[in-house]
Length: 369
Image 1 (cartoon, helix red, strand yellow):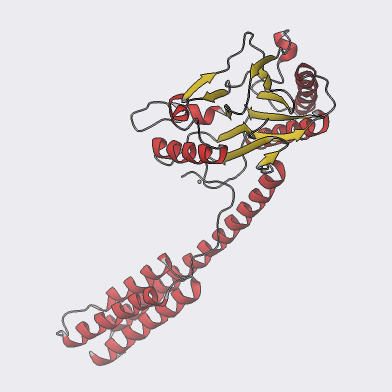
Image 2 (image 1 turned 180 degrees about the horizontal axis):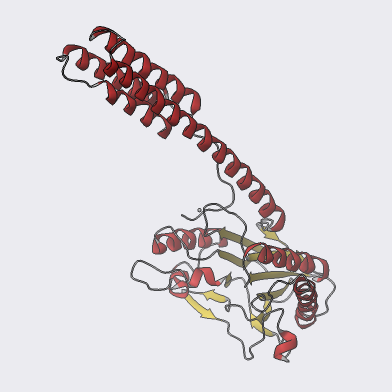
């Protein structure tokens, strides 16, 4: 989805007729061998294998049909070997019938759970699409590509987030990572995304925008604390970018988030900045502001934003994913190609299973800007 991206199934697998023929052929084989064997050899109880195999590829109806066929085959064997009235044959018929019924009940329960899981996944995917809308491929003079990988198979909702919006003659971008868990993390992510979309175009600078966002997060945490839940570990690391259309620069305010990478001519440089700023939600405790820095960002460069689910992904030997080294290999690629390479390489490094949700956003100016 182990790693899943948005979208996904949940629909029950419908069996092919070739697979349905397998338990039927098994029943026929057991009947033929049993009928031709001496009466002292009883292979009839093996008929229960057929309905036991069926739920692995079929639903309740097919399982019930195969179970009924197995019981009928046991009755036929009993009729051939001395009649239905013998205690041994009655016990065998009863055993096959009882086990077939239990297998059918198990299949019904499994199907109900599968449908519930499919509905839950559908709701989660709808919530994720509403919460984390895909970034457009083009915003103003910028080419953008993004990828979101959820660590859990059963859920599509995580604490990583990103969004972008036009603000005057420029574009402002947010990438963040909620440090809470469960529904609280989803609530904080939704709050921050909504607040950013609301005030990103109104704030005069990234410093002011960070303060406004921090105020929204603090207000949410206060309301959340009044419910009796713990908020001490709830905060949001965030990276704010202001990319003016007419200037080949990028203004950055980093609120405790992993620094972006500036890719140019086969190199990857981390834009750490001169001053450290606190995550959103702890500014009142830290007592410091949110400074911003300006870096050159022209058509020859690509900005790569990410969450720590990328850099903290471990390989089979326990080594972290070397994002800067790998990104430098594809520094000259278009954003969509770069993200595709990194996504594939990240999954290969981690063996297809991430320990945390991961997000990637690549940005490049169109030629001529």
